[in-house]
Length: 167
Image (tube, rainbow, N blue to C red; front, side, top):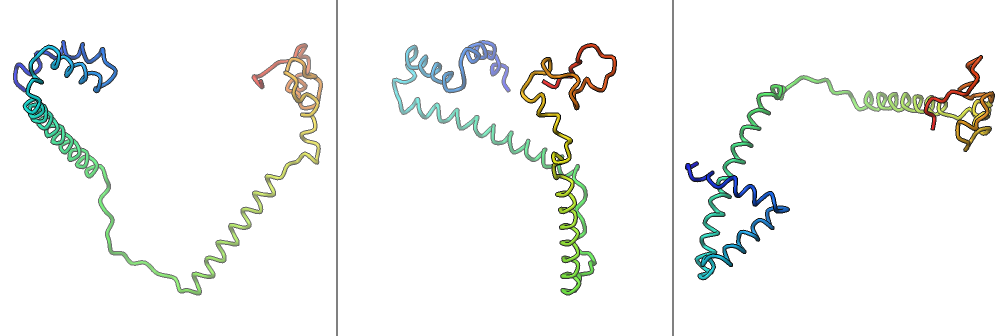
């Protein structure tokens, strides 16, 4: 970086901050160059100059990205566990043993699913949720505090219903 390279950073940052992105900033710069300089009086030379400078900074950006990728790969490789040995001894089951093993796994899975299904069945028929219909749709302050299942019916001696953020 030359000593002149950052000389206008403050001014250019001020201009950049007044724009909503790169395209408006470039539009302002090229509009200025068109209106206030002779830069575009020879369009072919102008395009060559722009292409030369863009190519320079694209190359620098690509080199920076390659370096960052290499450093990230190096960090990932040092943090990764060593690769497992490719050769190992493993007993392979016979086809008959495999079929019996799969049948056993399937039977165990079906038993677990049946047990879970039985546990999930609603118990409304046994009357456990009947108290919900008494106050359904009413705000807590209008709910009957003495109704079965009401949060305040467990507190003997409570003169006013207490609410615990149900609504």
